[in-house]
Image (cartoon, rainbow, N blue to C red; front, side, top):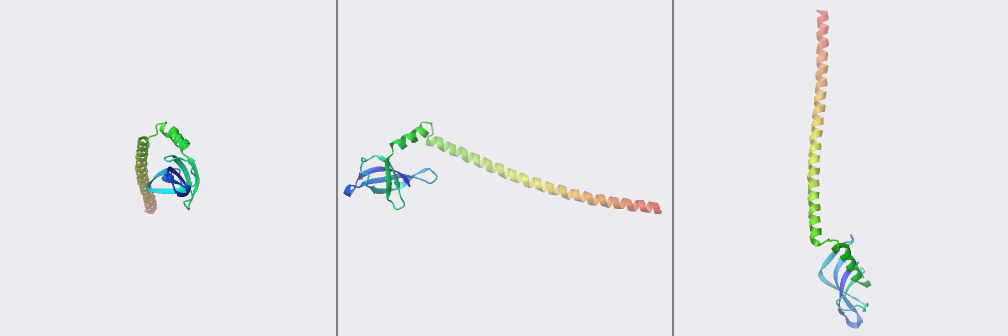
Length: 152
């Protein structure tokens, strides 16, 4: 897993100690590590305080180390130079949440209207059936009256 780390000091036997600062998540976002984690590596060509990108395997073994300067500069040019600040991202997150809430309300309103329309449709069908029964009853009564009128 890829981490942003800082070279902190030279360890015993020529090992370099890297303090892990943040890690890349599977969704390509980054999380700052809350607890201090260190790993040792044989990569001794980095001075103390230098930021590096380090790929740490599942067994906590360092698989690769490279200087983070180019990566940091690309983050700055892609996001910060374009005005994408934490405040901007917070506002966008708030706007997205407002849209989500608005869409939820609209969806609930649509569902309520759908239920109302379905209820009205059922009421209309029931009235149609009632009218058909009454029409048949009236036709039957009219036929009976005609029959009585012919006989009498």
